[in-house]
Length: 319
Image (cartoon, rainbow, N blue to C red):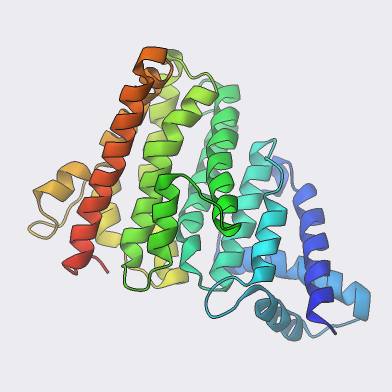
């Protein structure tokens, strides 16, 4: 059996799978690696079995890994699959989740550290969708819009990176750090979160016509990220052998380990402060006279945080 034919069948079946999952009934709200992997592997296996009557799933799975991965990175075929998955902007929150879930699986299968952010983002997206479904926010339409636009900015920058084009300065830094074996994985994944929160978030708020009336919903969704912080930590440890517990507990929960990170870190790396700044930057971006102020503030905030993380990394405080 040729790897090319396996890959083609995988792409076709995965596309079919994604198209069939554009509704809430098909979202798994109790995630685990085994369930996620089985979901996509079953789709892959079914496609191959129909072609060649192969029942040995272990052979198929091994072929899939060989096809998608090369030296702990996604291969050219893996890149092609992600580009296929992200060719079109998602049009609903369930498609957003399925795209992120599938991309996470591909990166995780190869232990490619560029997927660390995607692993955390899968948790974020699932929790926000649950909040929308449970009417934990007032404006459901706004909730749908922020999920779609916010995720689309990450997916667009991922495509640019994989196509050897230039993503935004924040995402370019994330992929540079994630690809650098001399940089701690903790530093890389945190800068990915910061890229999305400081740069993408205020622009996304503007794009979906956010107003002051959405402030309560905005901060409600922010609180949900604090709620699922332990899940981020668990996933990063499991998939990427990256221990982010101390810094993410400090970042999201404000629970810093005394005499370890220092005052500059505790002041600069504050999730709530960053989200508040992004909300305020949204207001300035919506004013023609305030755009340059907002852009400058966003740029300065990002590189200030990057500098703090670099110091922690060079001091071997984070691994």
